[in-house]
Amino acid sequence: MKPVLAAAGVAVALTAFSPASQAATEFAFSNWIPWTHKLSTRLLIPLMTVIENRTEGRVKFRQLPKPLGHPRAHLDIVRTGQAGAAFGVHGYSPKRLRAYAFSEFPLTGEDAVATSVAFQRTHDKFFKGKGYYKGVHLIGLNTHGPGVIHHSKKLIGSIADMKGQKIRTGGPAPFAIVKAWGGTSIRLPAPKSYEVLSTGVVDGVTFPYEALTGFKIVNLVKFHTKLPGGLYNSGFYTFIGQKKYDGLSAADKQVIASLSGENFAYAAGRVWNQNDADGLEAAKKGGHKFGVATAEMLASVKKIKANLEARYVADMKKQGIDGAAVLKFYYGEVAKLQAN
Image (cartoon, rainbow, N blue to C red; front, side, top):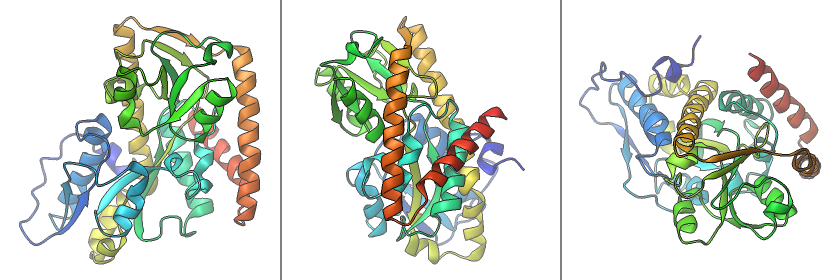
């Protein structure tokens, strides 16, 4: 069976439904990226629209004009009822959501559908019911596409090229790589990227190609260095308020369930692949320069990845989780899905 959102074309042909006019349970969505961003227009807004239509208007969403806090605060913003829905990045909460750090490890996956579905399956197998999302109802997990090094002045064609460079990074993996190569890692939320690039606060950023158009930085970074399997793949989680969800009817809960889990992961992965393709096309049209990591760079990243994995396994042991089994399962699922 094809995932429901994918079967709906992710962002098409929803006008055939006519929600009934009646009292509804409303979820106010606090979105820390613009509502015009393609992740919003191709995934989040269609998701909300499909739920509204299939519940015949009994469930509604309201798009808040501004986010109610920092991206990492959104789990608590929804948990405490300040908003009804949101999404977050695991890497923005590296301690609180340490269990999910494996999704970000480098050299893992080229295709966002494969990494997203594998991520969801790993959550379902190892972490479901562990209380990491207590107080909210999880819709689903996904990752973005493979991370790339984007620079404003030069190609990063060797480890030496990174020395002294100021690079905006998100989660722990790109932070560790930039630091190991002699650069200065500046950790900022993704929406700050245009500001810090345009003012010269940073020399470059680590992002999937999607960000070039998503955050309007395509004219600010014209040099791109790719690693096979990606510099990293950030993990995301989308959720709604538990209390309001609990008050829904069984039929409306089933609507949400049909759009959750692997169905959501598949649709989100498709959107990220589309967005990455758009960003890469814009870079090519702009005459940008592209490079591939050297053997020296790859060897270094493999060592960094091994260290990240070892620390992850040790940390998970303290939580009573078999981290080695988590990694084996996740990598196996990514490989299997990419092969198909």
